[in-house]
Amino acid sequence: MAEQGEQARVLPLPQAPDAIELRHLRAFVAVAEELNFGRAASRLYLSQPALSRQIRGLERLIGCDLLSRSTHRVELTLAGESLVGRAREILAGLDDAVSTTRSVGGELTSRAAQLWKPVWERNDSDDEGHELAAAFEALLAKFDPPPEVQIRPVRAGGVPALRLAPEKPGPGAVLYLHGGGFVMGSAYGYRPLVGALSAASDTTFLVPDYALAPESPYPAALEDSVRAYLWLLDQGVEPDHVVIAGDSSGASLVLSVLVHIAEHDLPRPGGGLLLCPWVDLAYLLPQITPTDPQFLVHARMMRRSVDVYLAGQSLDDPIVNPLGHPEVLAGLPRMLIQAGTGDHLLNQAQALAERAGDQGAEVKLSLYPVATHDFHLFWPFLPEAMKALQEAGRFIRKTTT
Image 1 (cartoon, rainbow, N blue to C red):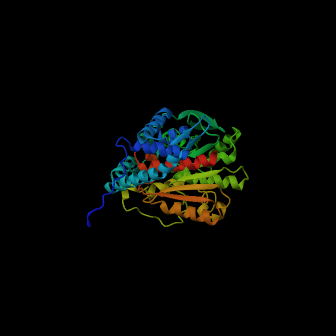
Image 2: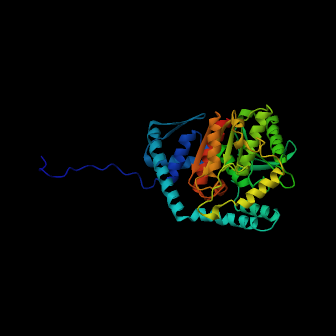
């Protein structure tokens, strides 16, 4: 018998093999959530053989099967079910720690600010818009679209456009309306962001080069966007398998298209995706100044863009001012709205979510700890942007399949 006071000896649990890496856990969680190797590989920007090797490596290191595979389906084994929740916790904790550290250090948001800087400098000049548009295109050109996404030009109802699709897209489609304050941006420039969304969702995207102001003021952009939407339906895509998406001013155009569709009894799409929406063209909400002015979308540019876009169109029109006419938000399709907590347009996303919800619309508002506006553009290096695209991809897949 042990002497009194002797400390009890506790056998330690065996440690995890040192060779298990985070890439193994990320691969396993992606397959466990998708239950499809192809979709999980697209989500992780890996080839399917590379993903399969990581899963086999993890199973070998742990010493048991985590997934049951057959020709037609993938299922979690009991061991896999036991691991998936704990693996999610490990990855979420690490991601939060890294995001917090980077946010405190300011390295990544400062990088985003430096990329925006040439655009804002052109905005402060007396240039009439061409140099500003060129600076925005130069920003977009800093990144490349995912190589696995196929890109080709099409004419969608007479509107020049780009079609972006993964190798094996699902049955639905996304109509993407790019940002740029109604005066700049292009389908070509938006290939990186839209390509990332296409890969994350395994879905075909159509990006129209809708008419820009001041050469083509309202309602030219709206009409081009509606024609592109109807063209998608003419290609055999079911309307409830279509998502209409856009960022910044493109999100405002998304709302205009959705309201127009409802008012004209056109086939209703299955969903709307709004990224960092700039939807308060009538300045109904308090104007917020960010704590760090380097992240400000300049008020001068915004007002000038609205003026040339509307070209005298009344702001009492519910199609361009749905926040002022919340009744038009009733009956809109389910929507996902994403915004950065430090974006000075955050209150617009919040107001839209609240007013649409009050009208009975199914809407989710997701916030990410990012200071810059339109943070999704920086998905190649900003982890919060990648998380947002993954969430958007899940929303699109659920709507379009």
